[in-house]
Image (cartoon, rainbow, N blue to C red; front, side, top):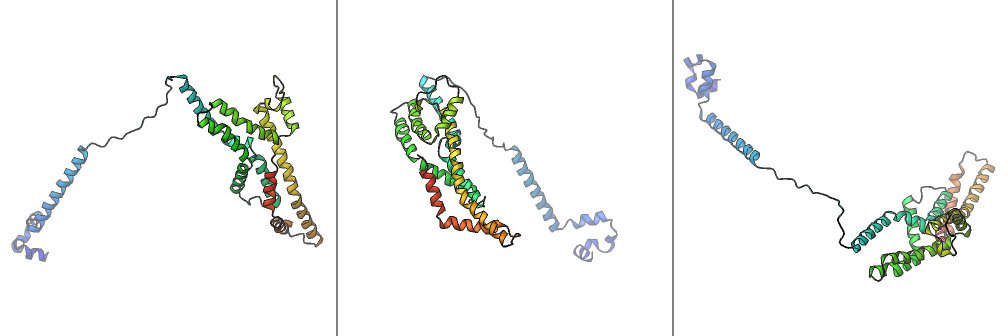
Length: 287
């Protein structure tokens, strides 16, 4: 307060008895306070102007795409045929995993690999991704002659506009049918022909419809896969029995037999070059 009185002499002496409001008015008459008030006024005006400009500026319109599905009139029968062919191809692509499993060597291969992994006592090694990938590429290896014939006789002529779509489908089915017939047991095929209630019994194998041949082929593949898996399981089962008997005779009943048998089975599999024997037997087992 003393400094304030020294700066503003009018507030000293007898003027000290003025009311508080009068003192405040006299204090604000200084040059520095005036400059501060002018700056605050200009800043307030600038903010008000910017706000008004932002309110008056129209926001950009959002472009919303329109999606429509309709059925238009075809100009010619060829356009209808092309549309149906595209729809058929999309359906085939949707069912491609099922076709791969049901009409190729994939079923037998994956069953044998799964039984082998279970027989060794390590159901998580190799992982499922590795097992499926190995079975998939081994399937392509086994099916290579059939796929090559389909490509040469059906796909390439159709892409070169040498044959129509229906003829291409008929040509593609023939090698695939031949492969499935070679792997199918005669007993299984006769069983499904008997329960199919066909209007006319097929005179030869070419007259057997795919709706009868595919279930017979899958049944035969399952049977063959389990037979091969049984023969793979036997040596590992013998190792488990020998290890368990040895531990019992030594009085080591508290030691789990799998602790000893698992390294022995892995060692036997590696020394016998088991992967080459297994994959080679699978590849050579297809006629």
